[in-house]
Image (spheres, rainbow, N blue to C red):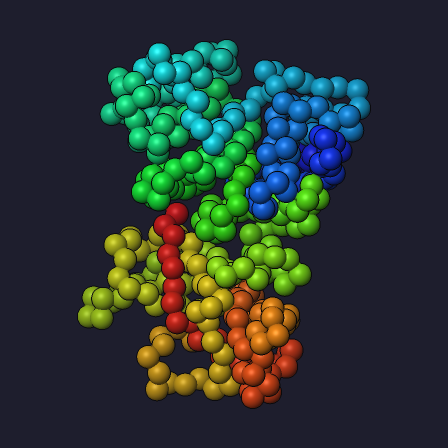
Amino acid sequence: MISEIHGSFHFKQGSFLLDIDFKIPGRGVTTIFGASGSGKTTLLRCIAGLEQAKSGFLKVNDCCWQDDSKFIPTYQRPLGYVFQEASLFSHLSVKKNLEYGLQRTPPEQHKLIFDEVVDLLGISTLLTRNPNNLSGGEKQRVAIARALLTSPKLLLMDEPMAALDDNSKAEILPYLERLHAELLIPILYITHTIAEVMRLADNVLLIDKGKLIGNGTLSEILTRLDLPLAHVYEAGVVIEAKVIEHDEEFHLTYLEFSGGRLSLGREDLLLGTKVRVVLNARDISLALENEVNSSILNTFRAIILEVAEESPGQLMVKLDVANTLLLTRITKKSWTLLNLQIGMSVYARVKSVALFNK
């Protein structure tokens, strides 16, 4: 059986038209990314059955939820939905809110145990409290737990951090990463923040004005120079790496990825730990030779694959480092002075590395 979610919706609401056909993996986190008004929430509501497209199709792994002859209503779809606002029952304790989610599913269909979900989201100390006395981040963790306790086959999350302040976002992100790492339930996650895409996504649906303009793995979408994510200020790539060594003398940690070894400031991580590393385009420069007399520790041999103009004076360049794609933003003058060309071998010098623990 192919693990896949296939959806196709033609849905008109006032002057707005959603016209999308997509296929994504049936596991992992797929972020739905786009500007406000692009149709992200409308798409999620169609998937949930809250909106019924006249022309619609949805198959979640081996189960068809909608086609020309069938439309399963929302309450019969095995899904969990987490909104921007937690929408908890204020007259019930946290535990009673969670039990409400648990009771929505027949006992024989329970896939997640109450205590496991509570531990996964770190809410054991909140069970006796009233939702009105919780922080924004705590409320969202409870809302996610309630959705999970319905034992969904699909979890939908509509910008769950949009209403949170920076401190609450920092609090909840590690728990979202735990969902990503420990659960097999496919997650569709709406955001308009590229940092959330980089930190959480396995795959990306890129939407603009009701149309799908990009669909692929995180690496594919971030590095396609014909798509907008490769040209935002935070443009860059996310690579998977493994902790291989700690250098106590120089207080460094060394990571291994397909293109070689990365050095960064000492991190308190066990050897063998898998991590996500963000390399921003603005933090990578190019050189024709490997300059050993330099303060930059991370330098890699690379091949220039593609170049695109960003502005009259700037270019975005796509690089291949032993089958790992990188982006660098350089000036057109630098391109000309170095006489750079597609296919040329150069050295990519990485000035800064950001680390997301998985």
